[in-house]
Image (cartoon, rainbow, N blue to C red; front, side):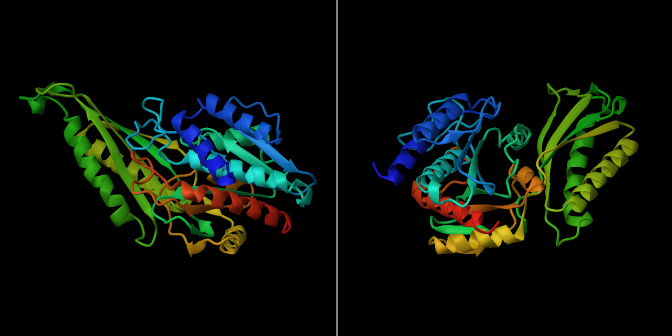
Length: 373
């Protein structure tokens, strides 16, 4: 079996048995077994799920990162290796990322004697729930690391394409919940209540004006209401309605401006309707900000390794890798996966041809980075 075929086989096994965030027990066992069989050293961190391997010797230290968790999605892709775990699927391609970094680990192991230092490879749990990066940092995975690199497959790019950018790349992720407290009443006598559905509906419309009218048009911002829930029968005005949604931006100043404006609107509507509105924010990852030097370096190495490189557009999705870049320099990159269906789609099916070349790229990137720090 060739090197590329081995990585594809591992990817398919991971794909058949996906696990959700913080439940990646079998996934972790597989990765540990494959790494140890190849003679790699595993660091003795106290992790329930996730694995950290290390290759080489010396003081210099570079890190590579893969994410290993899946999503609560029922797969519809017509592939022979469909998910065997009902309602769970690698719909974001973390099985691809894992197989790429497994390949990089094997290649680096072959050149261990020639490495100008050490390469630490992080197989991170719980990226989708935005907690795994902090878990690995608390365990000590970044100690002594000078720079870190990671990837996401990009279904909108063809295989062989590469993109990244210095500075802000992925967006911050904030979740919000708005609880509207009115007064219930018979639907035939609405004047005796305070209509929480009417108030919530008008608030949803008003929130859509924040991005278009309160924020500089040159700044990137998305404010989306994604869930509205209230009432349980046809002839009663409910007392409570709950809204839920997300805020995405690339600058903390814009993030704080939008959050303040949402609170102002909620307070204004509550006063106008003589009701109560509570706004609760749940913070996810901050914006992912690549170190310009390392983004340029990663692009140069990609071109040397046969990729067609380009400057990436801003991405409104969130990425837990941002937490690492708050601690140390590094770069996150996009590698084309040419899927007809996008990320988080039940029929997502990335082209496996990207795996082998990406593994060789990251091995070369880590080795070259060790010579520059």
